[in-house]
Every structure is written in C-alpha cells, then in structure tokens.
Amino acid sequence: MAKERKFVIANNHKWAYLRYGKGEPLVILHGYLATADFFVPVANLLKDSFELIIPDLPGNGFTPKLKNNTYKNIALELAGFTKAIGLDKFILFGFSMGGAVALEYSLNNPKAVTSLIVQSGVWRPKALPLDLERRKLNFYSYRKILDFLRKKPVLDKIFTKVLEKMGPDNQKLLATYQEEIFEALTNTDIAGNQELFNSLQKVESNTRIKDLAVKPLLIVGEYDGVIVLQETLDLAELIKNEATVIVMGQGHHMMFTAPEKLALAIKTFAASGGKAIAEGFHWW
Image: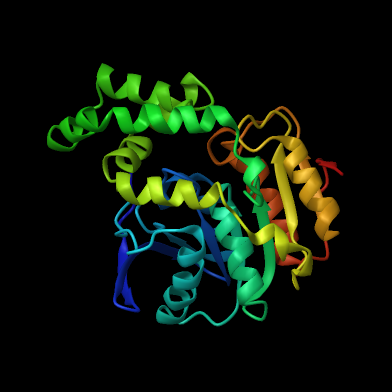
C-alpha cells in the first residue's frame, strides 16, 4: 500500500516524496513509469541505517511533470529539490531511468554525492531495447482504459491485462505489488513520460560519463531483459568504476524480486563510503 507523501516546492515546482528512517541521507530515484512506492520494500530494509528520501520523479506519482520533462531537466530540478529539503550531501541511488538521472546529477553536482550506486542505468541510446519502444506504444494505446481506472480504482481483470502488456517480471510480482503498480499507472502523466522516454533515446551523458568524479557501484541482474547485462559491463569499462555486482538469477525489478539482496549491496557499499563490497555476490 502506498505510503503517505510529504510535499515541497522547489523552483516553483511541487515535489512529492517519502522520507523516513535515521542515519546518513540516501536519495533513491525510481525507474520509468513508477513511483517512490516501488522502492519501499528495499527502503524498509535500510531505514535503521539511513534516512531514506524517495521522490516521485516529475510526471510520475504525485509530482507533476516539468514543462520540459527530459531526464536532463529532471536532474537539474533534483538539485533544487534536495536543497529545498535541506540536503547538502547524500548517497545517491538510481535505478534504470533513475540511473540516467543519477549519473547526470552526479556529473553536474560532484561535491553533493558522497557515494553513487546505479542499478541497470540508462547511459547511452542503445541501452533501450526495441521491445521497450513497442511496450511504450502499447501503453499509450491503453489511454482510455487508464482513464476508466482513474474513475473506478479497482484491481480487476482489465488492470491485470494492462500490467501484462507492460511486461513485469512475473505473475508473483503482479500479485504481491498490485496496489503500488496500479497507483503508478493511474497517476502517470502520459505526455510527460513520452517526453521523458524520447529524451532517454537521445541520452548524451556517455560523452562526459568517463569524467565522473564519484566512481559508482554498478548493480545488474544476470537476466535483466530491459537494460541488458552487457550494457552495465560496458559502462563499467568506460568509467573504470569502483565495483560491479551481478546478482545471479535476477532480472530488472530486483526491488520487488530480491529486495534483501539489493539492500545488502547498497548498505555495504554506502555505509563504507564506497570502500567495501558485500560478500555473497558475483563481483565483476
């Protein structure tokens, strides 16, 4: 079930976010067509070690889209958001599309990020598979169904079919996290996310990414079918990163299917200031 949001105005834009836990601040950026609630299973495992700040990124959840809702502009506005809630330095985690935002933010604000962790981040145009474009087109063709669901918020067979078209990892994920996924889809700004997706197809951070001041921990699932394993390995080679971990037997949505493993990797790396990695993983 969705957690209660906090709200703040930054640069005349309203941001919705979750904030709880205690310890060093850890900002978590969710992926495409998602909300902050997607990372509650992981955050709940970290709340005794970190203060979790998880915003709904613009155009998703309860944060309205930006006038120009590109990943670069979201990264720019993220600086205003963190300042508005009193954060000067923090650990930054980005997943998938949120990984593109995290990388861009870190390039622009190197002194603000104490540790950087990216799971299956988008960092070059070829990272996005062609079938994701087809799924996007399927999603927009369901505009009328989504409008119906907004008026009648029930978890029924129609909603299940919409989710299946979006290609989640498995039926267990659907059964366990229906409410979170339902809220994400019914609060999605369709035009804003189309604009965001188009900007990711032209992602430019790869031209500067080798100059990252903070060398990140990169995490990827062995069977990631969205941002495939080789994309993360190529990124690691380019930036000469701190460490890369392959989570065996896992796909893209590890925050749902393996929250304990994802939380352990984040906690060990972040708590050590980027100097330690957790045991029990396949390190590349």
